[in-house]
Length: 112
Length: 115
Image (cartoon, rainbow over all chains, first blue to last red; front, top):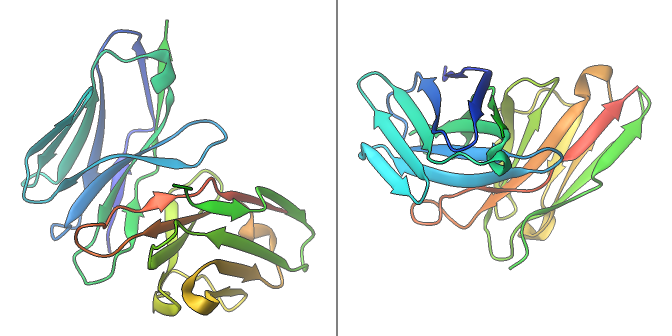
């Protein structure tokens, strides 16, 4: 079955770049997503990438997809303390169903 | 445009009791999904409605869980009887359609505590 893995924790200083990594197993995934969860809040869709793309940039966010290695990353430029949150990557399988398979989440801590 | 809303935000019940969670999707979204996160683990899919029909209920853990979406608008998820392992955060999400409009938007979640 599908499996999505992420490192559990990342700590950076304000102003640095953050890179959150994710690996997945389903090579037929159609879309891959990044969600952000702030304390006490729900999941906020940050960005997504279609499986036929290698890179997508959206303001401070850059998503890189390496299909050969089944590796997805989210780079946050000029990280701010407000970026501290849990970041989840998720894949959507290509089976006709639309369920998302999530990783365990990476807790990003940004220190001043 | 209002986002996905869930009620209640937090529920504390005793083992053996019944709890009903409610989700109101974004207006006009045909697709509605339930997920849950148990004990800080990964978020797991429960089921998917397209309008009022169950498209995929492969993630429902057992027959103590019953989801409905009468009329194709809001949905309820009933747990009866609740067990300790049902504690966690239950998320609802909705999306407009497949293809363009595939993005799933999540509600704030309902934190269920079974004691």
